[in-house]
Length: 282
Image (cartoon, rainbow, N blue to C red; front, side, top):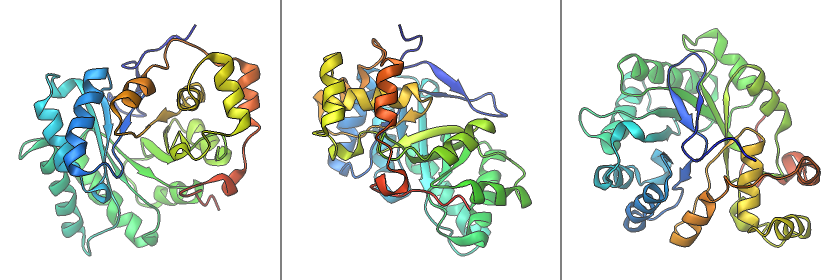
């Protein structure tokens, strides 16, 4: 039987901070819906919410946190910055704006990520140094990256005071397993988060997936989330359906067998299987 639960945390490298194994994603959750979806997730038992400046709903995540009956210290909130703002000071101000949207004037976030590797070497350096300052000042409890390949994380050694990054959030599911960066992160103790773990339902009728789901009497989404958990990823499923919010969290009372994990592993299409982005490793 599985030996972890929805609130069971994983330790971040070189940090006292721990991250819950399952997160709730709010990508493209409309502002008027996002508050209700976050509240439903918290009520269901999620303690980890993942937003970003790009999602344009940080305010609503903050509103839901304040409206919930759960102490802030029991929740883990992530946000992300997509690109630098033109100077170290302007970039830092952009980070602070997110923290204030989510946590108020004296608030904090638990994890702040660089959302993309696309801003070039100088841009990535400016972003990371701004995040290090935010960490030093206690406005975030941990820092990391998203959509970074091996080359991007290795490059950081030249300027990072905090290395390795504590998290790398990348697209991960059976069709896009990104094995090179996954193995690299695990070797260095970097927590690997899985975005689009249910492939935006594009694969809901895939015959292999459907056959595995029927075997366990589970939905295809539950199989994919459980698969991610057993790969030691932190999945971040997104939905605004109250029923699916509950169902996506109901994945801690069964195991997928090694044989069936291997069946799902065989679906890997490498970078061709990505629906958003496969990282560049060299």
